[in-house]
Image 1 (cartoon, rainbow, N blue to C red):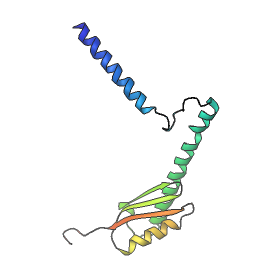
Image 2 (image 1 turned 120 degrees about the vertical axis):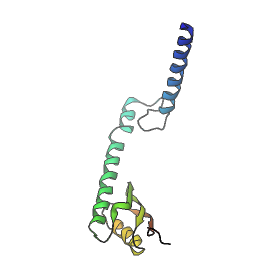
Image 3 (image 1 turned 180 degrees about the vertical axis):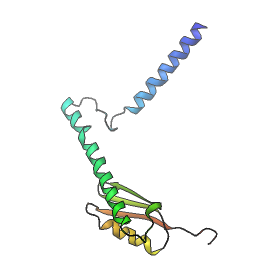
Image 4 (image 1 turned 180 degrees about the horizontal axis):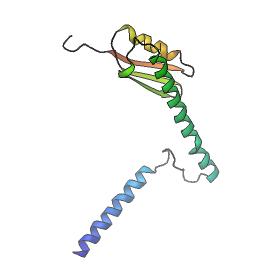
Length: 128
């Protein structure tokens, strides 16, 4: 009975070791390439990704705020993704004219370098 428990524990340890190695492969955020000096490793995984994420969140909020200023647009079904100045709009709007209007609003936000518009028109319930 003890040998079965020992084997199960050994297998669990092996599985955990395998999965932990899969998460720490080179090229992943926060990992240090083998042979890299400690100083450059701190620079590579340090504040740059955190500040980039913060800037992306800020830009995303600014785009939402700009869309929200237009009361005729229901922004509840619009998703905004910002990455390095590139904004992707997806979701639905109630009128076909709003598809381009929302894209133009997003382009007018300072810091937006490009807009990918994936918005569609929401079809009414029971209609075609």
